[in-house]
Image (cartoon, rainbow, N blue to C red):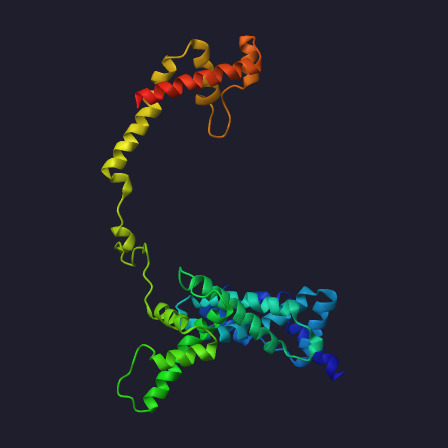
Length: 314
């Protein structure tokens, strides 16, 4: 009787749509507060929902598993705030990893979902950081990715050890011995360690920064690039090309007989960008009472005459 009463009470408290309890990520503080209030599942409940999902593709069960672990994504995402990317984006990518983990989770392996999901959440966040942290690709191989995510912590550890050894000079860069030790530990070349440290220590510069909050225009490297459109020789070439497309075409058309001129105009000049307008070879053939092949021959001959006229005009 007691078990039945507790089950009924739990059912009464469970909302019809559990996702309604979670606000959108646009309000980050409210989202984090909401997910931290969501109840955790007991091992028995987790196993029950996992079986329902695996055996019956129960989407409600999947939702329960995901929602009870949203706080885990928030916790893991905080570890990556040092890369300067929006916390909301990190959480969103981590949630994608959580969904993948829930989809692949096997309750018969006697492993809690929290342990299984951590790998998928971190993997998804890692991919997002590598794609978006800088405009250039900083890590391609598995070893380089390991270097990317471990260089900062290893460097801090080495600097802390140096401080404990009473070294008077605090170096911002790694020493030769530290580079060799890090390369050996992470299984990469010492040149790769040096290159990665240079990239991570350098500041990002936006090529074309947007205006600041005061509406003032911010100048970036793109502002100092030359404008080829106002270069004198480019302006002359543009003017000559425009004249060739107007006066040159008109003069070349005047050298054709009426029939040739009409064919060229209908086949080329009256055709719109979407392919509409103008006339086909068969339509012109019917109008002039000749074969379509004859119209094509006249068109080819007319185009040769116009090409010669345009060369002389230029």
